[in-house]
Length: 74
Image 1 (tube, rainbow, N blue to C red):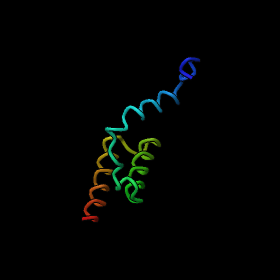
Image 2: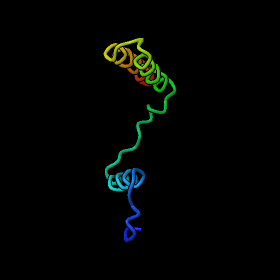
Image 3: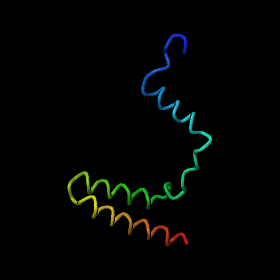
């Protein structure tokens, strides 16, 4: 495929970037799988996207929500 110059495009570039970084990639933080964390992130994004909040206010609310989730896990 290299000889045919067929290794191009977005998919190839993404795969190549992943392959190059395999040795330095860390495991995903398990908190990102938490339903409350996902809802807090989604809510903050929705508020900004639909103009119901500023980025700063949504970030502050998200920070508070994430703090509550992590405090509950301790």
